[in-house]
Amino acid sequence: MTTLLVASTGGHLKQLHRLHRRLSGVDGPYRWATFDTPQSRSLLEGEAVDYVHFVGGRDPRNIRNVPLAHRILREHDVDTVVSTGSAVALPFFALARQRRLECHYIESAARSDGPSTTGRLMSHIPGVYLYAQYPAWATGRWHYRGSVFDSFAPFAPATTAVARSNALKKVVVTLGTYRGYGFGRLVRRLLAILPSDADVLWQTGDTDTSSLGVNGHYAIPEHDLTQAMGEADVVVGHAGVGTALAALEVGRCPVLVPRRLVRGEHVDDHQTQIAGELGARGLSRSVEADDLTLDDLLIAARTPVKSLAEDPPFLTLSARHSSAFIAAAA
Image 1 (cartoon, rainbow, N blue to C red):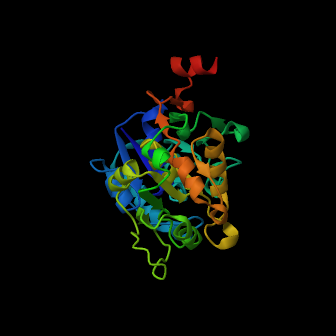
Image 2 (spheres, one colour; image 1 turned 180 degrees about the vertical axis):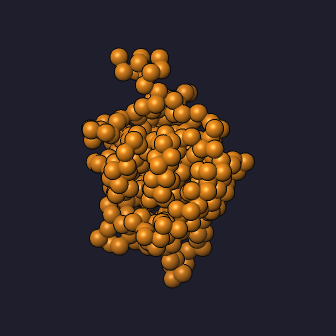
Image 3 (cartoon, rainbow, N blue to C red; image 1 turned 90 degrees about the vertical axis):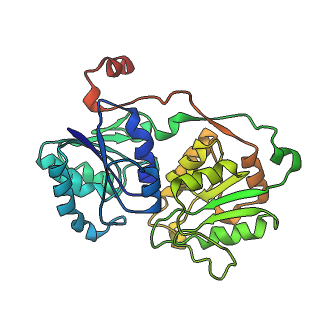
């Protein structure tokens, strides 16, 4: 039997990739269903993957994935489906529950004050196990079992080359790859404050930089981007979960800048939730684009983070009769 892992690319895929090995009560072998992007090709290299049609949030074209979901569930002997969202998960879960398969939906860590549209729709599918990554709104059918960010902790500010010289030599800027939304406001602000001699790698996604003199890359393979982050003095990015996790994994405290709905930069203001949560944990320097200063970048560059020696388990509801579940609930 197979566990199918379903996620949109970007932060959703990054979260599921980190969380799936922590799931207590859900076992492999694993198979993935996601979009075909440089990130998924790199992150899932060597894994069993089915590529499905791209859909954005609230996208009616998701119906195109229904026959693909039906085929994947049938051909690969799937008995369990797990997802961190977003909309692409809906046809898989609806069909899986018709087949009486076990389904686990973990709401994105981007949602600190309640479920997303996809999460609310999932709650209407009978038998789906639902998980919040924040205890504050884990009520009713929603259960709290931890967060993808629990694997990291802040260090005290370090004496680094940046601290000694008070200068930035290498910078990574990543704006994600969410289609249809640019973040030119952040690019323009960075051009105003970055040192002229800084070596900057720009991952710009759908942000049009043609008039800004920036040599940007639409998307950079996961391994290449992670390596660049590890070599950089500081990472600056939109406040996406994927961006934050990539930086934290290499010990960087990212500068996170939330996209804003009123500026036409995203479908809603959920990135303010991510920035606020990580700022409160001491795992990021979170600031609005128009308020960003060079000092924010320097402070982040002097504030490393660490990964815990062992990831805490994510105790799913299917593990409720296990000794680990009983001990954690005691």
